[in-house]
Image (tube, rainbow, N blue to C red; front, side):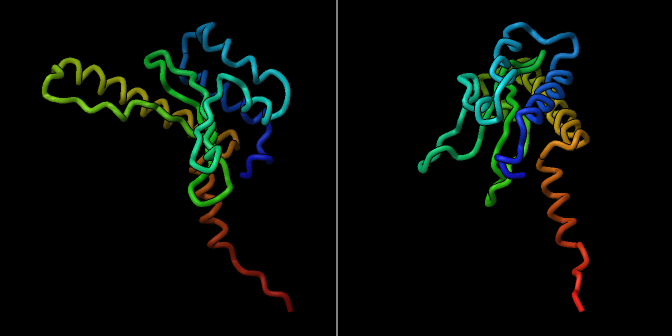
Length: 160
């Protein structure tokens, strides 16, 4: 889905689904404060909020907007709206922001196991949230692939 076709209401719905999964016991006030920019205006206004990270490339914004919402287990999980590679369609995704850690031999087995448990919880959160978004009709990579495959296999209509 092209960015201009995504409504701020879609972003709000994506946030609600994310927060329900990430904070089953209630959303912390600090996280709710970051959402003030979503209460009014259009998607452009919401994405221009100070709490939204815009990833820059060598030719300006790359087309990746991230809102760090965290989870009850890990504070760095982000809700992302990003351009699919090689096209102008945007999708919602979850960036668990936990794959950049490399553990050397100096890290204890206990520390490694605890962090791997957090990574597994984050992986499950990502799957649950992205499935929820797809079920709610929001643009996700799964829906992008499904729609693309359906278009490839649609019968051609000949005109007589």
